[in-house]
Image (cartoon, rainbow, N blue to C red):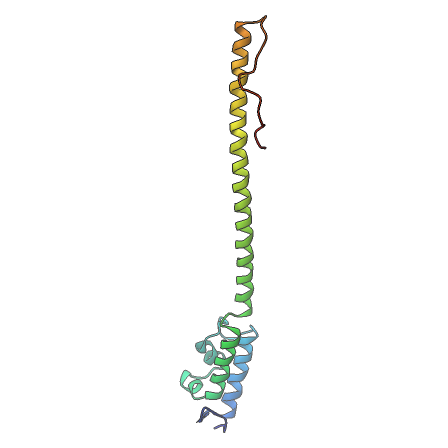
Length: 149
């Protein structure tokens, strides 16, 4: 049994067990598990150390270190943190592309409106020319500001 104490509670595990738990804890924190999926859970800790849950629960000092590390660094492993960063970047890029598409759709609608107006004017001018071949052609729309492009 070790002599370490945590909050007045003495660890009730052998030095060999404490070393196995510390080694397992280090492997999990560094993202290189041997026996589990690498998630930072106490279940994975005792499985990595190859001890029972009850034995792990008697290692109060190690569990306090585990809890302190998780409180400081969070439960995400390095792989999960990297994955989350990639997802956040993809979401940011998707948002930007969606905004770009929305702007292009608005420009396309404006262009459709301008083309439709020009087509209508062109048809009206052709009809006017067919009626009065020798006459002067006058525009149907008054001159004004151009449509935005």
